[in-house]
Length: 470
Image (spheres, one colour):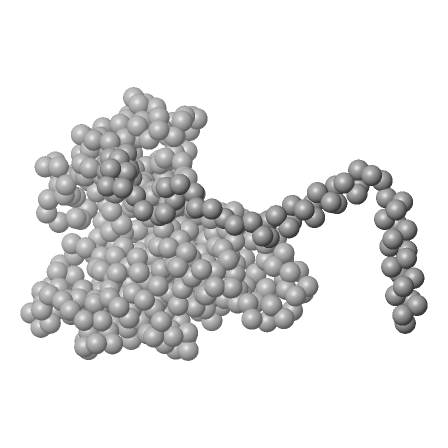
């Protein structure tokens, strides 16, 4: 053992003797530098005692310029000078003192000003007062809330429904109630802002697919499946969700629900669908895009909708199986921590759903109006029309190519001219934090209460304004 060690030392000594001089010099320098670093005493730097003089403090404060709490807003920004409505928001509306035909709000069935809704509101007001002043779990559950939840579940043909006091919070609370960090959510790139906030709150991995592009969705689902096959242990604890809208508010397009359900079954993902623009609109009885395509409710894991559009009330709901819906009563943030829906608004929603069920001709009239206005707007050459012909939401884009700001100003001029001629319209507005920067458009909403003459007049005004400004 001693001999072996001696032989190794001898070889090291021989290698040392044969090494080049510059190599030895470099090793010696590095050795001395390491020793210097190890044993040197660090001397304090002058003025580095961590204390500033009063003059230095004053100079730093004088030089510091804080960032503005909010960015500067131009004086001509649309949010600074909103249009003011006086009176009821119905088929006709008074905007900035001028009576206009209303093609700007989502009052699809005209129920916001219907006598049956007003009577229900007064009845609920006299019985329950103006508000609940408490979340559902803390004396905020009123008997009429339970009655409305049962009525919605019955209407939608599902086991259970839960109410939210704000339409926006329905889907934005539902998504993070189920999807968590580590999960994967596939979402259409054109989903509305409420869905986008829900996606962000979930902290899941978000994979957006091209709008209504089922091939792109299938490609992404297949990619995810291949990843799961390579790492089955991770796949076993990763949940996958698919989020779509019945009618996309940002485009007016219908979801390709049959294909979506086919992919849901094939790739075993959980399907969440927001029907805010299709509830009370599509299908023979107004049950939404699911009824429109004759898709069984069991094919959709959770449906959500706002009561603020076709129903003309306030709040929203989620519905599905009891197993799925009950989970939100413990983990839906908007359900647990917001004051419950004002009972008088629950009374209005009940009356509106009952009215819809008893007057199905209203739905037929809405479809006729949607198709009529779609045909008329499609013939205006200065515009490109977006949206399905049976959708009550249409978008008008400028046919010619212009910079974003220029196109926005041109459409503002069209909207202003329409107002001057008695037509209330609005340009679609989006926040800077949204997933996509969308092309400027005029959003046109259709109501069942419009007459053929009123639709023709509105389209004629748009045609003349487009010829002038576009």
